[in-house]
Image (tube, rainbow, N blue to C red):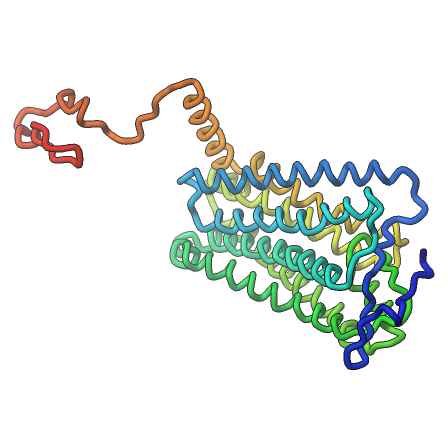
Length: 360
């Protein structure tokens, strides 16, 4: 299958740009019983979908979580769902059902959305580190620097910048000519194998430059910012005199640090050891893409106290409603106005005007 080439009689030739009608995603080669691995990825995808949906629902329903930090957490959960959905269903369709041919347009769309949501995962973790930095190092200015408006502005700017930076390599690839092989040695429309396929017929130097520049902007600059922010946080923790306050500050950072390690370490290993065998690289890439979205909600539920309390309250409310209990969220004066205790000398308070009417 590695001898598949672009059939010039079927290609679309527009101003000397040769575009094949399809690419072939090779996936794993020479590994038996890979169906079990794809089933595992399907199971991870379902857990990711359920877990992040729960995170988003709890944040929407629990008023105590309507804080600036949880805007970023909600955005991270939404990005995790989108990133898993952009990758896993197509991967399962290709390799479980032997549909490894993908059209040219679908390939570029797949590349764009996978890298868009990976980029947003990095930016979301950076925004959360900024939130922790301000909360611990500048607590008196926290509500000035980090509020709902500023958090919406940060997340909105991150989305715009992510779309802009991912469009660059996709735009360049759309101007490549593919006059040789159409076999992509990866598990999705990976840009780096595409550069190799286009090299005999196109000038891929700009994309090779971007292949180093974009990871630096998307991964290493956020990593440098996160590491620097935690150096400042550690310094601030030593200035906290009360052990209780120091312990509470450490707990607020633990979940974020775990998320950072889960996301950045595997990707850094892939970029450092780029010479690793194809199958190992594909396994590492695929696990890096699907495991963080599954683990993020688990870590937040287990490591964030206010989140656990909010989930318990919502579950208790649902159980009580299912049992037929009646939850009174407001004071019902129509039934209980005569039970209101009035102290001596406060007789003027015995008249009530409400939306239900006037009571005396």
